[in-house]
Image (tube, rainbow, N blue to C red; front, top):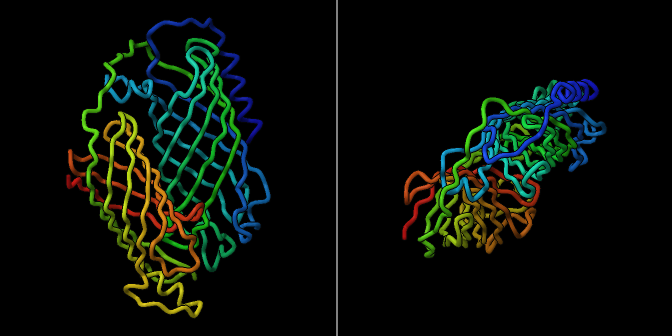
Length: 364
């Protein structure tokens, strides 16, 4: 599979040998093919059954340059957006293969002409062909469901060969997880090295350059957030737990790209009581299942959408098996001036706890 991917790349490369020129217009649409080689990281000893080999990866993407003359797009140098599909050939009977379908954003970090350094972030859906089954596939300790969330972070070095064709090499980190709505959920982490070609189609277009945006509202705002999650805990096959979250946030916009946040967080997770009881640690079902923390975070704004990274420290937590701090990785979409929809993956370092879905309302 790896050798076939290399041959495809070389064939396209040899077919495209035209001159390279530069002007102020750009090709808006492009397609990319990338082949990679990676492995599943062994972050738990129960995964040794299926993480002892390398595996190939194939990827096909469509990209489009933002041309809507939006101020935020100019701030990110007209970041590309698109859709991609990736296929991971695990070559393992325990875990099968995986396919991911995802939208993404491409950001140019450095470079102007032929050589550019880029970064891509993607989130979508993944499909695992052989998830855990207590009868037929009990050795798969990583994933308990066929449908999963898929995350990818990729850094790429791109070299323009001609007006339409470029070659790139990339390092990618991919992750499959069902956010613990079904156990097991150790997750599948796949670092890989990649080689690809990008081919531009259609005609060139002039890319508009809007005026530099100005953020007029830099006051501190009070925000109330509420969210809900359902998830399972070990042992596998147990009941589903329903977790609620309330947060009071202080949010300050510092510039067009960034906001900072300070929060007081409340979580009520009934799974804490049952998880501790298995180890003969008994707490009250109500207050004992409550966690309270304080945290700080940062939002990166892309128009009405923003990505957040949050770290919190528990002031109250009865679960002795958890670290004293927690993390949150969120995506937020502004519905109107005061209301946002958001999803947030709550984790403890690399261990995902559950996925929260909710709304935020700006009080002041």
